Amino acid sequence: MNLLVTGGCGFIGSNFVRYWLRQHPGSRVIVYDKLTYAGRKENLNDLWGHDGLRLVVGDIGDMHLVRRTCQEQNIDLIVNFAAETHVDQSILGPLVFTDTNVRGTHVLLEVARELGIRLHHISTDEVYGHIRAGHQSVETDELAPRSPYAASKAAADQLVQAYAITYGIPVTITRGANNVGPYQYPEKAVPLFSTNAILGEPLPIYGDGLQMRDYAHVYDHCTGIETVLLKGKIGEVYNVGTGREMTNLEMVDIVLTTLGKDHALVRHVTDRPGHDRRYSMNVDKLRALGWEPKYDPKQAVAEAAKWYVDNHWWWEPIRSGEFREYYNRQYAERLSGADQ
Ligand code: NAD
Ligand code: DAU
Image (tube, rainbow, N blue to C red; front, top):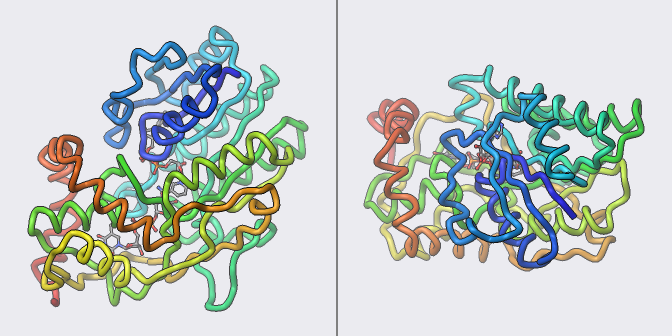
């Protein structure tokens, strides 16, 4: 099989490429990536040179390049990870989220339709909006996104479903929970808190820290996507997570305990506007295909925190570069008025 993996230099995409090539040695993977700040060639350092792997640097919104790449590389399947992915960045500068997440996905759908290629789209639990206590989102729930990021992902998710209904093109969708693990860009909570703790810098917790997330290991997201690619029903949507949540304060406690760092580093700062209180998904539909997560959320967070201890080579150059500008914009004022 020849796969076009868009966004394959990002966090989940690179973990998926590594997993896929190991499990499916005869496959070819073409990584198609714009290499934004979050797309890092070094995420696949151990694999460049592998016979089955190529990189095409490009934007998913560039229809000519997407079409040409699919034709030249005889692509059978597009797996779309490419996206702008950080909620806080979507609050600071939302337009690029529409360009990539909505229009970019639309371009992939047009090329898939024209060339008769299956498309698997990576969506998110954020499309359901925040979930009242006691409920777990199922795939047929209405979408109710609440941030510019989530709204752009919900629009893409619905476009994919609309193309399946209108044009009958073969698509599948997975909606993933919060992932943690190797190579996650340190703007996201677990790598931010882990690297801040290692550096002895304060950990900025938004609001009361009682928001709930299902922190799932990226490995389980990869096996979930693989399961849907191999056994999923065309036209269907599948949730991928552990089905178990914890509060952000519990997550921080695991990070600090794992790293042997002092809880005095915790700071409660001004909340994220429109902060979703709780995500929670029912994953029975994916389980019915024979999939099970390997990690529980506690293990997942602890494993992730350890990875940052062992991989300074990866995150130190990021944290000393353009990331600093973003960090100051996002946190300097918040931290100056923070409570311990
Ligand atoms: P990431 O930000 O780490 O990586 C995104 C990748 O997409 C980068 O390699 C980037 O260069 C590339 N990209 C961005 N714009 C592009 C464009 N216009 N054209 C081509 N490439 C482009 O993201 P991630 O955390 O790995 O998320 C991957 C996918 O999974 C996204 O669709 C995201 O919405 C979804 N998702 C993420 C999580 C999570 O917890 N991180 C959970 C559920 C779903
Ligand atoms: O749920 C899936 C989503 O998970 C993905 O679709 C997104 O791409 C991914 O970024 C992630 O979104 P979240 O907003 O849930 O993740 P983030 O790591 O930004 O934040 C996790 C929680 O931690 C959330 O409740 C906000 C909180 N937080 C985050 C940061 C960055 C803080 O309290 N302080 C922070 O500095």
